[in-house]
Image (cartoon, rainbow, N blue to C red):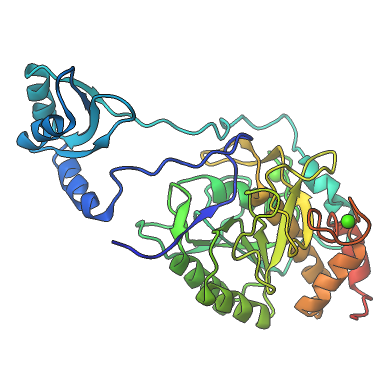
Length: 394
Ligand SMILES: [Ca+2]
Ligand SMILES: [Ca+2]
C-alpha cells in the first residue's frame, strides 16, 4: 500500500462540485492483475445475479472462471470484474447477467471549432493584459506549468517537458494542462484565443496523471526541476488539503531562487485551505466571475493573496479547439501570466518586490483593503506592467 498523499487539480468539471469516485479496482495490488488480464484481452465487466444469489457466490463465480473481481456495485446484486471474453460468456451461460463496464467521461466541455476570428477571453481582458502588450507580451520569461503534462495544440508553442508520474510519457492526456497553458500563453496569431503573456516561453512538468491526481512527491520533484531548469514563473493549478514539510521546503527554495510561484487557492469554498497555495512562499489565487464576484467554490482564508478570473474560462482544449472550465485552476494561470508580464517588463525586481507591485496596483474589491475572499484584490496586469520599470520596492 502506498502511504503517500495524493494531490488533485483544482478545476471543477462542472459548477456542481462533486468528489470523483475512487476507482474500486485501482488498488495497486490489483493493478498488476488487471494489466495481465488486459494483456490477454480481458475487459471490465459488471456481473449481476438474481435473488437468492449473494455477494460471496457472485465473487466465487467470477474467480472460478479466472476473472478478478472488485467490490459490489452500489445497491445492486452486482460486482465489478475484469476477465476475458470466454469467462464472460461462460458466466452468461451459467445464468448471470454480464455487461461490459464502459467509461463515462465528465462534461468538461466538448472541443469547439475555432471561432471565425481570434477571441480574447473575458479574463484576459478583465486583467488588462492587452493594454500591457505594447510594453511586453512576456518575451524572455520562462513559465513552467506543473500539471497534467505537455499540450499538443496549434495555438500553443512547443515547450519542453519533464515527467515524474507513473505514466510513460509527458503528454497531457487529461486536458487540464492544455487549458491552463492557453490562459497563460495561447498565441497571438488570429486563431482560437490569446493568453495573458503570449510571448512567454512555456515548459511543462507532469505531476498529475490522466485522472488529474498525483503524489506530493511528484509535485515536489517538478518544483525542483523547474527551479533547476531556469523557470522564472511556476504555475500550480493543483493542491491537497494536507500540508507537507517537504512540499513547503521545495516552494521556499524556488521562491528563494527568484522563481515566482503561483498556485490555485483551492475549490473547497469559504474557510478552506489548500497546499501548496497556503505557504507564504506561494502566491495564492482565488477565483472571480465576470461580475467580479468571488466564485462560490473559491477557498477563502487569511492567505489568499489576489483574485483572478476563474468562472466560464475559455481556453485551449485537449484534442484541438476550445473549451470552457471553472475553478481556481483557471484563476492561477491568469495571475501567473500577469507575473510573467511584470517579470518581463522589469527582470530586476525581486519576488517580494513583484508581489508588492501587484498588491499596490490591484483593484481592491469587497471590504476595503485586504480580505479573505479577494486577497488584495483583482490583479491589474496593465497597471502593474506600467509601474514595473520605475517601481520602488518598499
Ligand atoms: Ca491564438
Ligand atoms: Ca478587499
